Amino acid sequence: MTKPIDTGGNPGHLGFMVDTPQKLDAASHAWLRDDSLRRILLAIKQAGGEARIVGGAVRDALLGREVKEIDLAVNLPPHDVSTILKAAGIKVVPTGIDHGTITAVVDHRGFEITTLRRDVETDGRHAKVTFTDDWQADAARRDFTINALYVDAGGNLYDYFCGRADLTIGHVRFIGDAETRIREDVLRILRFFRFSAWFGRGEADAEGLDACSKLAELIPQLSVERIWHEIVKLLAADDPALSWQRMSDCGVLIQFLQEGENVPRLRSLLAVEKKYAARAHPLVRLTALLPQDETVAATVAQRLKVSKREAARMIALASMPRRLNGKLDPVPFRRALYEYGIDNARDGLLLLAAEHPALDIESALASAATWDKPVFPLQGADLLKLGMPSGPEMGTTLRALEDWWIAEDFRPDRAECLAKAQKKLL
Ligand code: ATP
Ligand code: MG
Image (cartoon, rainbow, N blue to C red; front, side, top):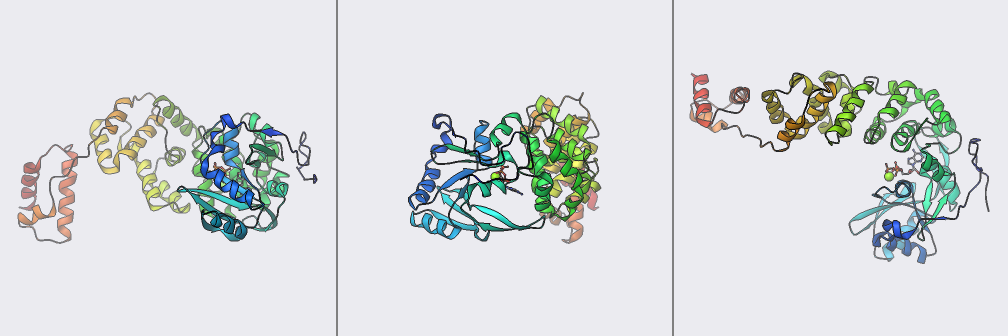
């Protein structure tokens, strides 16, 4: 039976389940024959249920991209799924069982399996859900048409909202009325820009863009962790610049990252990445969008509650062009390599070239790749031998000596360093 679904009046969409007889051909979709996946699908089928692959895996497979994570939807309650899989000798981790999700682990690979759900109550951040056996209802609570595609064990594609057609033309479109869907979960604003960056082509969906713009003020009610997760994924797209620009133009960016508006520098960085076949990490791309200022980087890192490691990296990257003095002098570059590590120095080079496109960083990149970090020849024990009492002053002296050694471009050997230390202690 087909049920009417509110598609928000999108023209060209039928408004009811379109059980299109499409099939993924097994020959070009080897991932569907994966043994671990088939074990799970079979165990559920033998118990009278059905599991289908859903979301990212189907989308990526249809685009001919590599399928990485496989998420499944299932028409049985989570505890039943857990019992069935365990009985089939499959390890089960109850990763979010209250929300319907368990993770099956086969051959060290995790498969998230979520019971079909429909929303009962939403408040913009959390949803109260109820389990169902209605595939169409489960599809309707997903965010975009391209994310609501399912494939069953036989390779049959279930496309309830014309997601395949949207994927083909690069149309990222909310399922149903965009404004309503955003009010249910405000994160969908950021997901709209994330999926547009990855899969969108041509003009952005006008209804979606308008709704994002209209409801942008709701963004601060989201946790910064969820925001951060989305922007890192957005910035990992091949070319996130247009989507980021739109996010800025329609008043979304200002709600959580008003400092990150230097899209021209991001574009320049993307061109540098292409030129040198060097893909930059999303954090580096983010740094390109921010003013080159360590204080700003530290403030943003703190506001977005990024990990300590990420914060240190952002601050190091923000300081890199200044440290390299806008040039490619080998001495400051070696210093940067020593103090910030190869990865940061390499990323610093990319940022430098983004700022100064005429600069040729080819050989500097090569020298970074083969850099052997020199070891400072002195230790505390050496200063003790020279008669210095141990204590905090020793650390300060040692650091001062190391600074001198770095400034000398790591040339002084142990004997010279000892002589310098002796002089310093006299
Ligand atoms: P990726 O390859 O980046 O993981 P994905 O499509 O798997 O992409 P996820 O964020 O992992 O994206 O979400 C999995 C699926 O769950 C989505 O494809 C979508 O169907 C649904 N989904 C996730 N978050 C939401 C949300 N906030 N609102 C509605 N549906 C969502
Ligand atoms: Mg996913």
